[in-house]
Amino acid sequence: MHLPPKVAALLTVAFIVFLFRRDIREKPNVSGALWLPLIWLMIGCSRGLSQWLNIFGLPVAGASSLEEGSPLDAWFFFALIAAGFYVLNQRQVRLSEIIRNNGWLIAFLLYCFISIAWSDFPFVAFKRWIKVLGHPIMALIVLTEPDAEEALRRLMKRCAYIVVPVSILFIKYYPQWGRDYDVWTGMPTVNGIATGKNLLGADCRMLGFFFFWHLLQTWPTERNTWRRNELRLIAGFLIGISWLFSQVHSAASFIALLIGALTVMFVGIRSNKNFIGTYMLAALILLAAAELAFGISGGLSEALGRGSGLTGRTLLWTRLLELQTNPILGTGFESFWLGERLQQLEGIFFFIPNEAHNGYLETYLNLGLIGLFMLIALFIVTFWKIRLELFRNFEWARFRLGFLASIVLCNWTEATFTTISATWFVFYIISLDYPKPEYESVVESCAVLEEDAEVAYFHEKI
Image 1 (tube, rainbow, N blue to C red):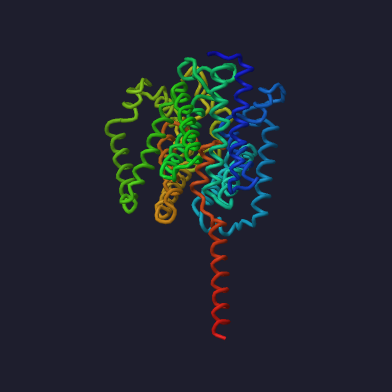
Image 2: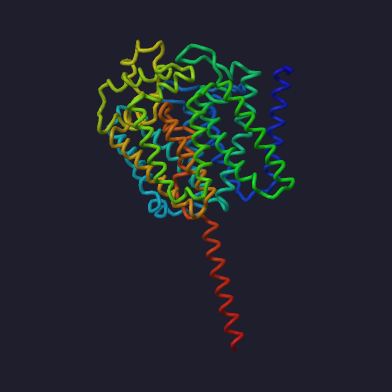
């Protein structure tokens, strides 16, 4: 049955309102400040504010150039960051704690800032660096909620309430917004709520992984009305995400989702917690050796119908490595794709690319070998923190581990370490460590109880 577009849009809006109303009526242990990370995440999953206003019939001036960007979007991001900073200030989040618990992450951000000095467009690079600060700020809002795990669940579910239904609506009923043409092949493709097929694939990977992890948490709970309704919600969104995957044909995101899900299941075998570091290291060594010896990524791509060249990516990587850049320092933070350098890529394809389609190569071009080393070190440190967390908070730790595994894999063919990226934002959530308020309140409560017990014992003796 094919509904008129306006009727389909009305039903979609009603469905989203129903989901949010259901979510709020459950009275989760989260504050109103969680709406800030939700807006931030939604922008990363979909489109900029100016693009949304144009869709809703409110034309605004877009970007005057690639270097300048949209002034409206810039001010909107600045307002979100300022509001997030205000929330953290009200919660008395201590910078010393952030630095002490996240040394490598702070060092990486500082190196990105220092690299602005040798960028050809330092002011543009500085503005983009300010935007990147929004990731740790919004992540800290989530992590300093009364219940950080519940805050993450609500954040991801509320994001899915919009991304999945609206993507389906755009693809089926509003093709002018939900469909496009693949710049690599020229074939028709879908982008849904996002600005491209790969971004929609990344959305599906992120949300699909979350709902799989949430399913593993929900299934063993006591059988009651809440469990039944929650399982229905999970099943419905997993079906919707599967349909989007069938339309978007994003093989890299789908494989990364499978790897993340398998990691979560593998860690679920409790006896594997003690040896998870050994298993992961062995897996990485085997994958690297297989790639160097047999080129398994090309073979897998060919098996998926993409050709052994990963849909032109290997040719692009070769040409990018041939360009004259500083191999040690790079071209400066988020600066490689600016200016006249793009003219050197003319004639390779029938379009001029604007990303390397490889997160590690993208980091090397912008930040050099130093930046790439720091990124890999950041992944290793994050993994080590997660490994220790497995013995303290198992469910939260295995979400972090599975998501980290999917990020490390998917960035072989996609570049998600970018300024405004939903995947990069969630990485900050899993990599940042900050003492959780509930732990502090429990310690204080225990201290009060012990003091009361001592007083009672003293009076009893008297």
